Length: 176
Length: 391
Image (cartoon, rainbow over all chains, first blue to last red; front, side, top):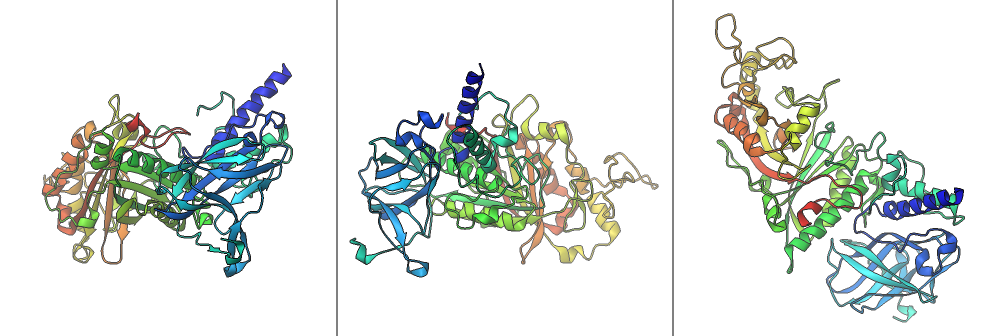
């Protein structure tokens, strides 16, 4: 009886977390809420994404941001990001400091330790659209598929917003 | 999504603190060391506590709740792209819902470059309304537009916009941030028509305030249940259940010529005493406006063309709830008249027609702005403002 009560509570708060972490109707949708650590059988199920958004752009390059939380008790290794349009989307990291920061493609996976957040933000790590096939129109949403090293994947909605920043320079020596 | 049927305190269901709380609870039960960025944020007042107005509810906030001291009424016209306008409107409303929920919860909007300015929200409310043009795009709802009133000298920039958001807060800095954050998100999607800022301060223990003529404004506003009935309907809905309408009029005051009027003349024009707001038919501000009362000469105490004589609702259906603000934009000063009512055709419009035709105060008033908006119903968490128009 006690076990059942606990399960109900876990379920309830799991749902609560999913609903409230966004506090937004369409901004983003996390993967399935974690019921408990043991039940996260795949990396994709361990991901809780929040505040996910992408910079509006008519064409060319753009970027996407948000907080990727690992609710599992094993690391998440984000390997590949794609979308239905077939855009090339890279995982980028920022290097350098101050006014001299530049970005380059992340070598290997983006690894999120158990319980940790990967914060993707302007001026920091981000997802990079290399050459948009379709415009990212403000107020609309775009869906990205995040694929992990275990082959699991999940679709995340990114709210599209106007943004004047995120004009990071490329590191010319990084092979772009 | 539907909320699980468990007894979680309501304030836990709202905003960032809720996420933090839920995160903390999860830590206790399972994934050890779970920590969200929000959980790590310093403790703050929970939405629903002092300093917060609720975003989710039966009605939008900022309508029948207590008036905050600072306001900006911002109007935008939508710039349509190719494709379905209905879908574009829907996306716009979803974004505004997200913006309003975050800002009223004391958080920055997505892509916010100054999220720190959202704290503490200081009773911030965002109240969203649509002009008839957008109801037409949605294909549902009819409120029409305000007619031309006698004496109108409307300026293009203060006329009807497609979209209106009433921003209110006790803190003008928080307010400025909220307006700017939303305006930045609307760039490219809209053209801003106006941002009309206003201020007021309730008199001690009351909801009335001094307007810039020096008069006590808002005396006869309906209260409590009567207010709710006037705004949202009494057995009969507004244009939509749990929605209402907002009439927004901008009146410039000719304060230099008002200076020339002595106290008696001022009181005569209003029908109330400037000193304490009492009607000329009584002695206390709470006395009723009695149009049958006569003075010692046998003449009506309140002239037939006094403002209060014409503004007085002739029957209950004419009741409106005023939520206006003073303005001084550096060039002109006056009153940003804002009233909420279930059906403007039976309330605001006939009252305004009477006033426009004969109000003794018209001598010192110049109407330069006029617009009417369909104020959307409140929503529950997971929904978006205007969702009823698209179902």
